[in-house]
Amino acid sequence: MRQPSIRPLAALTAIGMLALAGCGTQTGGTVAEGPAAASGEGRVIRAHQTMKLTQPHPRTGMTLLEGPTFSEDGGLLVVDVTAPAGEPKVLRVDVREKTADPFHTDDRGAYTSAQFSPYDGRVYLTDYAHGDIVSLAADGGDRQTFFSGEVDGAPMHPDDLAFDQDGNLYISDSHDSCGTQAAAGRIVRIDREGRTATVLADRLAAPNGISFDTGYRGLWFSELTENRVSYMQLDDEGRVTARHTAIRVDGGIAQTDSLAVDADGNLYQGLHGRPAMAVYSRTGQRLATVEIPARDAKGLTSATNVAITPHGTTAYMTVSGPDGGFLYRFDALAAGIRQSNGG
Image (cartoon, rainbow, N blue to C red; front, top):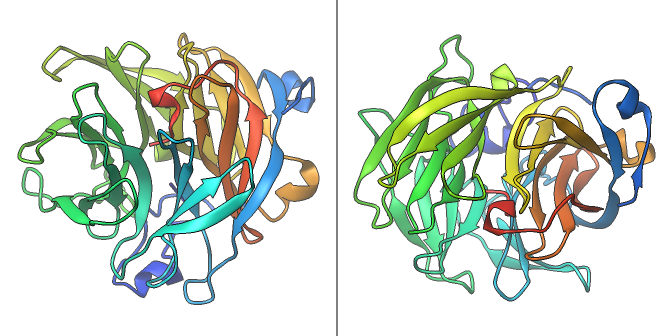
């Protein structure tokens, strides 16, 4: 989740934030070969607009869609990071009927991701503004604070999240690495009861996207200000056994945002600063670039995240900018699994 340069969002300063993960730079399907193929970006996958979900909010000056995730009944939840109090902060979308309804709002949170827990079936949201992890019932009610407070003596700025098979949470924590020269971000594991938080990696450059691989043997995570994706191997107790830089993203003016993984282990890396996604194999080969039509791109500045339909290959990408917040659909390279819900 990112928007413009050191991003002091007018929306979020109004609720007491300096910036919402503000490390980015300001910028403004059918499979086909295109210009990206000549630039080493693989083939081009054309994304087509499904629907417009939000307008820029007058009270916050912008809209930013994130965290698409499918529920068991096929509904798609999407968070609007900059929605003010009283307006929908989580939307429920019927992608077939092309309708969207309010799912949750409150007067506090600035939510940057959403995921359903395999342990209790509730929806978990990361509140970047306040450092909280919040959970909701499957119908959007019964808001509870699952975790709040410092981790190892420092507050969190939780961005994205992923669940292991037992329901433990893995969080990309930007901490205070944005707006400073220090790389101070972290990957944090929180047990499924919300009692114990453990730092698995630190000194990271604004960690953002996070997802398990297909076998739950390790985590992929992206670092926005280094344009890289790393891989972290874990043992059966969730402890780190190895870590290395896996992919260096040639993004130009764009930076690495959220990510998701399909059934073949391919990575879908969202881009901040360009309304597109980069697709890589698990061995690091650039397979494709997901592009929206050129006529749409002038008013859209990011493609933050993606969700692929469970057991299907239709993917829905969250795209935002001055023209509003949209869903775009494209044909993924493989089927959707739990890790295909953009955390």
